Image 1: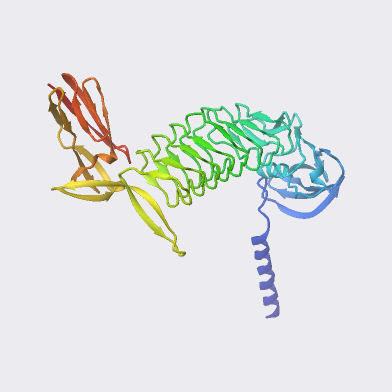
Image 2 (image 1 turned 90 degrees about the horizontal axis):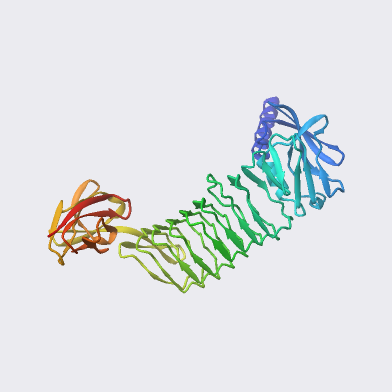
Length: 438
């Protein structure tokens, strides 16, 4: 019985130690042994599928220019996992050997070195390369580490870069231009840096989550003009931003995009914007007025919390109150569909619209006369009545023949034919109707 209890206890300790141990190296699934020391390098020999390799855990020597050896204990050095000790923070330059592998552990370790200004890589390293003191993968598709103490005041990412780990914590950079690579779809992490100006090339379609979070010196954003989505917390706590004019390409602002941008005074929202996430402009207390474009279909709760902004809202947005435990009330605004049947109007959730159709296939009007288009609507597959124009858009194929207003009122300009396209703002469902002017 005693032996059974002891065995169970040992098994429990082994399970517990597995639960709290650090995440295994991405380079190999290896079994660790005791830490060794050689030439002030503290390292562990790992044995995995690729054989034995060495991981440097720390460095305790005096060198400011540190050359990492190819081998320690007779096995190749493939990893670095610095722990941020005082000796390591003396390192100003580092030379990586042929054996060093590319890994996020390496990138993170080098990013912690507060005095590091330059990185060099052995020319025959098959995984890594360096240029102007900046670490890249061998094909230069990934900007892995921009040294924290590199003193350049401006930097342009090479056009080969598809992914960047950014410029976080660099106190010298004032201006950054991101990669112009067609496959580069995200900007880099720039928080806690001194960057004042960001230049975004035309290839960028999305500003990634937290891209400029805590970039407290950022004053100017030069947009590329093709950004469609601004990710969550992208400009969180950018306290030096005073004016933002989003490009017309932007359709979505995720949650907390400009949260705590306390100096932000003027914001121009694009006409095609459809989504404003929760807390998007919360606590941007300096905003005096912001106009919501009539393309917006959703405004998340607390999007303008603590703002003194005067907000004009599109007529087809339904106000929904949310009450919290402390009695605080905030709101969301969701697209609604106003449907009229037999003279009575009723609101439906716009998301439930499955189809729209023209009430008449063709319309005949006289030159100089007006008429109003009517749209039949189907809610969850069932015809319900005619749809209010506020959630629809209208476009004339020949404005010289027929003009149409945003409320669906057409006017004959001259004799002829024109196709009017009617589209639902929420999903883009549409139909066409022929108008003859006599």
